Length: 161
Length: 412
Image (cartoon, rainbow over all chains, first blue to last red; front, side, top):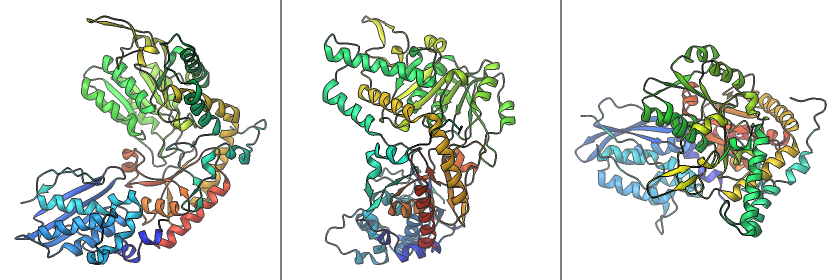
């Protein structure tokens, strides 16, 4: 039976209360807005690149504890990573929250493993992945993406040069 | 509407009529407080649908055989029943639709699309469900008309002074909800309709949230159109009703073409049937219409008087208890309200509120309730909403309150 304690792990509750990197970034290279039209959640992700490396990343928005904590933990996880590394991490994160991680241990995702409980609550997958879709949209810069998953951002990203 | 003559409901017995209410979810007894989204079904409705498929199924209006004849009679009998239920002047004013949304779209695409001209105005309100906003945006785009909206006051009532100002010579149609799904507000529809008709404005009432709770009298309201959904009045999904005043329906063009809505068809042209058949192209939702008939029977047996009195008591009790909780703010505190309680818990997103309640077996709705303008008006991204039906109990309210206390503990 799905367990509420598995969903709202302490790390998630703590990041919901005090999200990291929750700020606008005036010198962002790029930013994207993600919306979940089903529940009205909204997030803006800001990125500053140093070559192919994410030099700084931050977010702002309104959403539930899962979406807020996910955005917060995401910023910590991807800072200093390349685009390819970020894509790979998102791929594994998505498999974690949809319960399709196969034989990989969730621990290989580091702190992000606290979202393993989401897979028992299919309706919350979109909450956990909204910030990630929005980050990818920002990184891909300017090209509208179509996502197979619910909760994908509906807006195209806005390049700020 | 409680009167001395109103018999109290035998809740225990009534609840036994709804098999789903004895379900356990997540290991807990189900407490269903999402009735504004959809209501549960009593056994007579489930049995009517099941019996139809088991022994009565046939297409209607097109067979000479026994089953088809029986199905046709049963289907048309529900039309008569609906006409009595809403106090229409004639069954020919009752069009079966897929639901309230389709009823409103029908009016928009048939009446409004053929009547509106550039510069005309469609008057809606800030508390409408998206289904009474978007169809008007669509037809405005098609005709060059524009959409205006009556604003809300801080308690979630319509600003009637503004309504009077917005009702002008340019207004052609007024589309207003009888009861707000997001706030519970009961609007003074009879008065608004009268004001509109003085100016020759056509009126559309969204009855999705009123039909389950209040007696409906379309002639008393004086409206031209009234739409409601079967699944919110304890009937099946996929069926709804559009009442339209005969004179208007008679003058309206079809909006969908197909079988059953014609008089004659040649390869060059078709002529159309009279209402209501003109607006019911194709094989309709026969089983669902039969189920709707059983649902209306059921509601009438329970009695609108008793339903109204009990729901009013429940709302009063729930309002008092939820309002007393620390950090809880009610959204929508109109003087006239149906049994809907929208609220936010300070610092905790409604989805998280809903998830904790769900863990206790309590079903509420969390989100924007397809009423984003209402959310914007009250400066919240979403609300939690508990909505009651006559089968809910004071114990359900107590469970909700205990659940909300737990929400504060989990996120505290």
